[in-house]
Length: 119
Length: 310
Ligand SMILES: Cc1cc2nc3c(=O)[nH]c(=O)nc-3n(C[C@H](O)[C@H](O)[C@H](O)COP(=O)(O)OP(=O)(O)OC[C@H]3O[C@@H](n4cnc5c(N)ncnc54)[C@H](O)[C@@H]3O)c2cc1C
Ligand code: SF4
Image 1 (cartoon, rainbow over the protein chains, first blue to last red):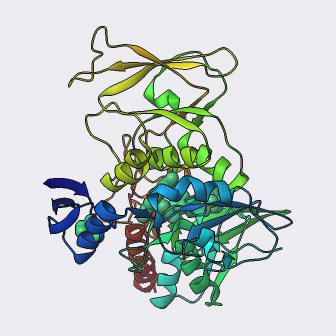
Image 2 (cartoon, rainbow over the protein chains, first blue to last red):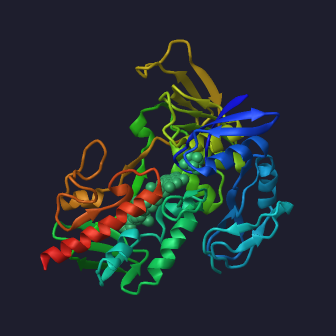
Image 3 (cartoon, helix red, strand yellow):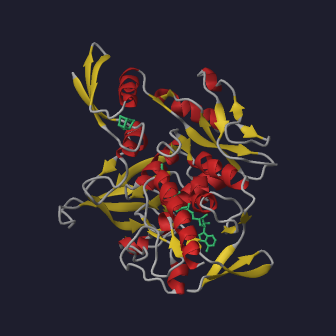
C-alpha cells in the first residue's frame, strides 16, 4: 500500500509517498531531507506531536505562562495532556526551558516554560 | 531586534530601540505554538522562545538603549522621531531610522460580509491574544473565516481549550496557509474544512448565532442552491495582514495602495534616504526566520547610509 503524507517538520512541507507493508513503513519517497523519513515512520507507526499551551500563574507578572512539551508526545494523548495542563497553577519565576512539570503524565517528556515570567 | 543587533555588528554605536509594549518580542509573544527558528537557529522553537534568543543577545549589547512603553507618534522626512513615554514626550533626530512596526489584521469591513453586527466576531490575532496572553476563551462554538496560518493555528488552539470549531471557510480552492498547518491543526482534529466556500452572512442579535455559508465557483461567484447554515457563537476572521505604515506615510514615503508596502526598488529601502523599513511592515512574511534575516540587512543598510553621509 502507498500513502501520501505531508511532512510537518519544517515549512517546506514535502509531499511524502510512503510504501507500507504489514503496518510497517518500508520506503519513503519525496522527502528533501532525512527528517521526512523519520516523520513518515512515526506518523504511520506512532504519531507524535509537540504540545504547546499556557498554564495559569499565581502572583506572577504574566497571567498565562506559555509552555511546551520538550519532546513530542503521542498524538492520541493530547486531550488528556490538555486536561492536566488546565489543572496546573504555577507560582515560581521561570526562564524559557525551565521545567514546570517533570516527566509529564509519565510520557518521559518535561513540560517547560517558553517565556521569561517573573514575580 | 535583528536590525538593531545588525546595526551594532556593522559598526553603529549609538542605537535606540523604541517599543510601545512593556515587553520586547512583538507578535511572537502571543504565537506560543512551535514553527519558528528552523532556518535561523536550526531548531524547532515557539514564538516566545525565538524572541528570547534575540532578547538575550540585545540585552548583552550596552550600546543599544532599549526604551519600552515608548509609543512613536510622529516621524518627519528629515528623520526626527517623536515618541510618548509614560510622563513625557520625547524627540530625537537620528542619522538613520529603521521602522519595524509589523502588520495589522485585515478586518471584516475589508472582506464585505453582510448581516448584523452582534458581539462574538473577532480577528484571529485578537482571539490569539485573548487566549494566550489574557487566558480568556472568546467562545465555545467557532467558525473561522479564512485559512491563512493564523486561522489554522487558532482552530487548533480553540479545540485544545475545549471549544468546538465547526468549520474553517476558505473562498479560494487552496489554503493560504502552510500545508503543515493544515495537517497538524485541521486534519489532526477532524475540523471541517470548506474550500471554495464563503460566509455570505452573519446572523445574531446581541451575540453571533449562526453564519450562512455558500459554495463559490471558479469565478468566486455564489453557486445557486448551495447555501447552508452553521450555528455558532463566535466568528474569527483571518483574512490576512497588511503592513502597518502610517508613520512613514506621514513622513511622506510613497506606499503601494494595494499592499500598503513602501514603493521601493530594493529590500528595506523607502523613497526617503536614511529611512528604512523591515519585517512585516515592509512586506508580509510567512516565517519569522526570513524576517530576522532581511532585517539584519536593514541594519547594515542603515550603517552604510550613515557612512555615506560622513
Ligand atoms: C498569528 C501568527 C502566527 C504566525 N506563525 C508563524 C510560524 O508558525 N512560524 C513563523 O516562522 N512565523 C509565523 N508568523 C510570522 C512571524 O511571526 C511574523 O512575520 C514576525 O514575527 C513579524 O515580525 P515584525 O517584527 O515584522 O512585526 P511584529 O512582531 O508585529 O513587531 C512590531 C513591533 O512594533 C511595535 N510597534 C508598532 N508600532 C509602534 C509604534 N508606533 N511605536 C512603538 N512601537 C511600535 C509593536 O508593538 C511590535 O512590538 C506568524 C505570525 C502571526 C501573526
Ligand atoms: S522532508 Fe525535510 S525538507 Fe521536507 S518538509 Fe520534512 S523536514 Fe522539511
